[in-house]
Amino acid sequence: MKLLVIALLATTITVPALAQHAGHEMPMNTPEADSPPSDPEMPHDLSAMDHRASPAPEAPPPAGAFSGPRHATGPLFDPSAMARAREELLRENGGMRHYMLFVDRLEALLHDGRDSYRWDLEGWYGGDLHKVWLKSEGEGTFGKRPEDAEIQALYSRAIAPFFDLQAGVRYDLRPDPETAHLVLGIQGLLPYKFELDAAAFLSDDGDLTARFEFEYDQRITQRLIVQPRLELNLAAEDIPELEIGSGVSAIEAGVRLRYELRREFAPYVGVSWDSRIGDSAEFARAAGENPGGWNLVLGVRGWF
Image 1 (cartoon, rainbow, N blue to C red):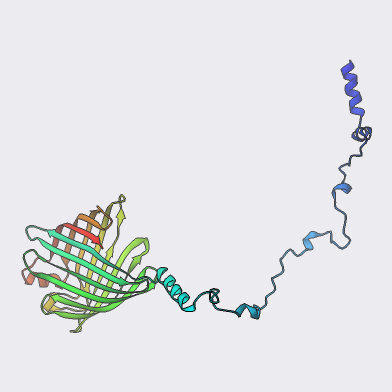
Image 2 (image 1 turned 135 degrees about the vertical axis):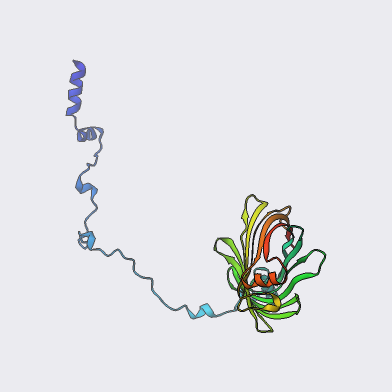
């Protein structure tokens, strides 16, 4: 009973009474106490306010911004020494000259006792924008002189982050007769990292031919790489003395599996299918040659 009476008395005691009993005035949570003092100039409808930031004032730079030396180091160091330092800085951060020798294919092709060899080499010297290229490729039968051999000297100019435009000359050492060509081509990296090397050739006899090469490196591991490759050769018209027919004259398709013992040196094994097409095949048969077939490929790839 005593507990019930105490509880009833506690409910009759208000918060203000407790505050006054303690000698303090406690503020009450009334709307008037919570709201800030009203500003007669402030509109009550906040939706009418413009919350857009005012644009920054635009003004020309002060004349003093263009006064003084062009470089801050000018008054402190010898101008000729600083000019040499700036040239070295530009050279070391994009203006360097490099070189590279690349052995793309150096291989033996094994096919029913008619074993042959093939090479595809290229090298360049220059910077990011301008380079000089040397290219050479050819093939032949073991124990005999090369059946085809060419060398190209090209000037290369970067036209996009992954593409170079190339122009120069090509000279065919074999077969006879030896022939010179003008070269215009493009080399670079297509989307999805397909490598492209395409060129058109105009010979000193007026014959127009073209070549397209596509390669793709697919890494299986950090050192094991499979590379599909496709090469197309085209001619604008028949060239009987070279056993070349018009249209698509020859195709080389293959796949090579290489293992990088070092990044600079990788032996490989693969298969290759070479075939002459159309009139080129007829020229080969008339000369007693096989127009194409499958080959087992053994070779090495490297760069220096």
